[in-house]
Image 1: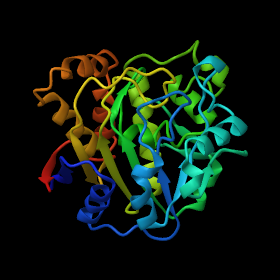
Image 2 (image 1 turned 180 degrees about the horizontal axis):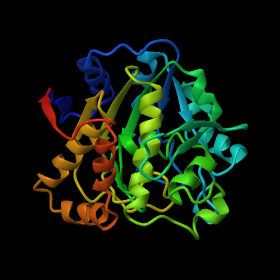
Image 3 (image 1 turned 30 degrees about the horizontal axis):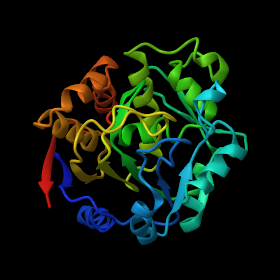
Length: 296
């Protein structure tokens, strides 16, 4: 059977909730809500006010992890004190309980027995405090991965600093200061991303759902302190229980668009071999690239 992906062209906080309801899922117990809280200086990330009705509906806790930046000029989220301060500045703590999952060690290590590149994933230890997960992704470009969506939120998003270093270096090191000298190539990096994502979907199997919002479509990620302004018009909101299908559907909506900015967006995706993350995740059984788009 093809995966179901629900789609609406209307982008409002209330429509996010409607898309969640369309999936017919019930996330049990304590719900981790994975978002991108935005780098200091970034103008494109989706604000807490936008996500508030959705997070309130599932009574979730916002979860994030520290970044693996090895250079202080790239951002402030690579250490717990500055990251927590920025989370507060961006307004997340005004509305939600927020859990920086790797604020304190040690990390948890999850095996990836069938991984293409990685044989283990390192994550913030608090991830094991949750019964289910809702992944709220801002779909956009990315300077290293080509694009960011549900799979990136699962992989880089849930990994600790050491875990991020492992992914970026294709398993060569978990030292974030060595990673940038050993960055993986355009095949190994997306495959390592898919490996890491697979460990999270396996852990929350049957208790995880995904919403991608195609708004502020910049070629740069919300992790960029200085990001390009959006190059395409907003497209809509998608929801699915399949992270591969939802990212593939977003990519198809971009490629099938008549927006003049799509060539610039897809140049970023293709120059980084971004679609290979989707291909690799499908090959690992994380989800299916075949889907039914159900417009609401």
